[in-house]
Image (cartoon, rainbow, N blue to C red; front, side, top):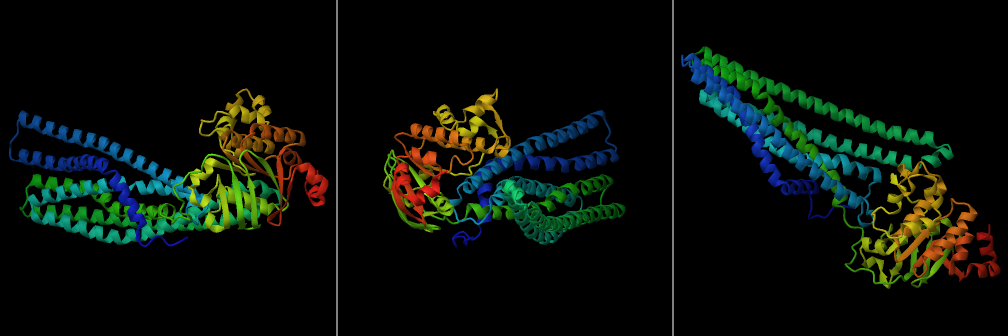
Length: 567
């Protein structure tokens, strides 16, 4: 992970400031309503004290009683409605803000080539969920902090009017409590950051294991993988216990200090009443406020902990959002047409690879080494930033280094041999955006028609996560249908028929050639059917093109080619 730009030394704080600035209106409304709630809660024991005071003075009448009941009803109504609508405003803003950060992190996570982020997909998932939610909690924390402060100040003023010493005791005690808890909250913040990192690593390990579960079972590596995960999970558990202990110590200390302050106010008020310096009504008010003040003090004392947790989560999100660009593309867009050119590309197993595919041609690449085929697909799909390899890749005459990743992928689609299948339906897997006009043609070309016909729902047949209810061949054909339905200017297919039988493979090869006629198509494959359907075959050996001709001519003239592809 590269060090962030020196101009942005505190990216986590920047994220929190952005969240606060973006929700200033909702926070202002929520703060006013929550302040009314706390003021109403504080007013209740004050009103009781005044009622007792008037009663002790002998001012007893039905009118005074009715006025007292009405005042209490107004206070209770204010408390109820202000809490209800205040929390509704704040929670809506919190949920909306969390959604914004989830989308932003997901957008960056789905474009890993655009940013230099040394995080696995499982870690990015944790950041996009738990960390985004905890960061957005700052929207509620600030209004609750202010409203709690309002309650403490109102109580301090009310007690100060009865006796200055009571008011000073509340103010000084609150300051001491916050000083102690702010020190403890720092430890919680650092422990929380470490816990989130370990949980994210455990999530990444789970994602890796799920992806590789079948091959792990195949060679008996599932037990070793399980032990590896257990180790990472145990570390996360131990850190979670550490955080829980810190939270428990924090909560226990806060409760003890709050109770001590409430007891001090109650005892001081009792002593002042016994000494005749405050009245019985003021004593009732002081005792009531001492009991009430426990709630805002608890809320007030919890806020530093939540602030530190929000900041820790914001710093985790900054690992993705503020990561330096891996490449700085230009603003250009690919020109119309489908030329594809590789000019002396050196990357991995590729050694000064050079070839050109004119617009509208169907070219097959027969790679003798699987590593070279994988590296070629990675370069074309922009999974490898242009700065990571030598040479140039051009589409329609423009280098992809000068184009945004999104523009390249909209013009040139590379369908990997291990493309993911998502939970949903056959239709949503083939046409995720719902905008393709060639779904039916893609289904027929990929020979997915038998899968559609098997089920009464047709294309609306439910597909489980990762295509668990489909066979390997069905998943591969579904992936191929999705690539064909995209109907891009340039389509690159990497081993699209390895899991289907020979007869189906032959039909698919002919269908692809027919459907993609007039569009640039490159197939990286060793399938005789696809090689035969192509206009031209490029032989890729030891990272360079060593021969090119039609499939049948190469079979007749090149013994090494014949040995490599004949089945």
